[in-house]
Length: 324
Ligand SMILES: [Zn+2]
Image 1 (tube, rainbow, N blue to C red):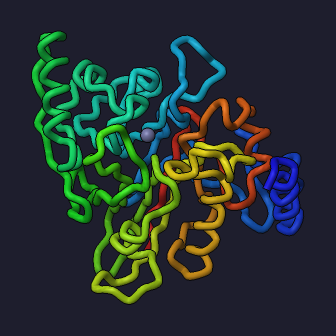
Image 2 (cartoon, helix red, strand yellow):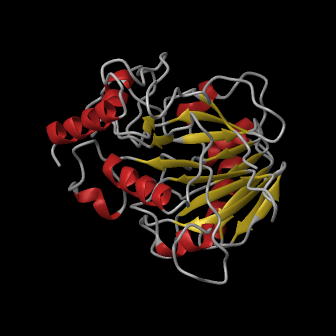
């Protein structure tokens, strides 16, 4: 679909929902209509809710001092747990906030910069077993240079959950490669207050990845197969959309996703009741390439995205409410 068709499809779905496509999803506006207003942004949450700040929402290509570009993708959960960290997001970490836990998705340098983790004083670093030894070496080298203490390393295994700061975080395989053949990039399932009786919050944070791998969907409980892992809906969904709105056939297709990829997955999960978000909570796009999205302003991008997609932005605070 080219950009014009995509825009038309987005506008058509907004019209269907009784929404004025020109006035919805602006950065400071509330969406109205079939989807309902977005009610999860910049609000206070309850006790069982998960607070998520998008520190950065861009792909590689951020340049220091630029105000036009999205920072490298990174999130902060409950003010305590980071997923990925680069120099670009140091100014979007809330003041007085000292997260001690850092999970890495993979070792591309728009996600992984050991010197920044050391400078921030992160105490626990979580890395896939497929490249943890290399990470230790990188950190050692940087720690020596900066004369800073080394963090503790926790080795992650796909499908094995880790409990940290009231969250249960399960690494899942991503469809994404680096120059290191043995490295398995990861996306994450983040659960809070999830018990056999209660859903709580089940967030699928998926960057960087082309689509969602079968094994990841099975481990998260959102595929349609019968398997040993019982099906369990996710309640929140954040996914990368590196390729722009007309980028479905970009050559990065083997490693990244486009807004249409995310929309398709969101529709399937919704239809099969594998995605059951609270009212007013959209699917958030992140890891948007500045260049491939044509440096579109936030409002303009949101205007052309089909529901329930919404572009996150750097510094956005979202409350993911716990479900019964
Ligand atoms: Zn990458």
